[in-house]
Length: 158
Image (cartoon, rainbow, N blue to C red):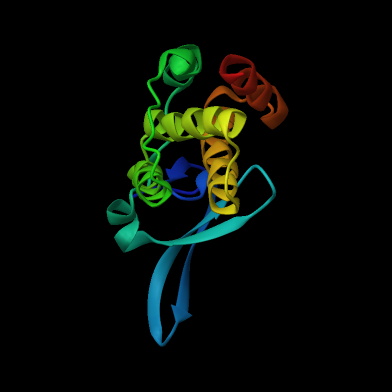
């Protein structure tokens, strides 16, 4: 169980800091929720405490692991199928895994595809979401600014 002040990563929303743990009644069911404040955009996410592990919530990576990931992004293999539907499903699975390396693979693959052929609206949204997830965790683990991390990622991928 996490505590107030812990930095955690949600597979589909990115990393944030637990602001509080509250009991809420939703649809007639009372549960405890982590109230997760996201550093970028000020979004707040409520995560049921009892299902957080099943969802894939985990502590953020440490600073050394984040740095290692940033240094290895250029070497990541990001081969993607040409079938849009299959590519979208594969990328969604990678995002849901919560693995930062898989998220980086999605970002790299979609950015390369965007340069080559352009992206559909759905894939453009997915790229934006994947970048948010990747950047938010690195920002918290390295205590950097959002802009600085985004610039570093863009530099190694372009």
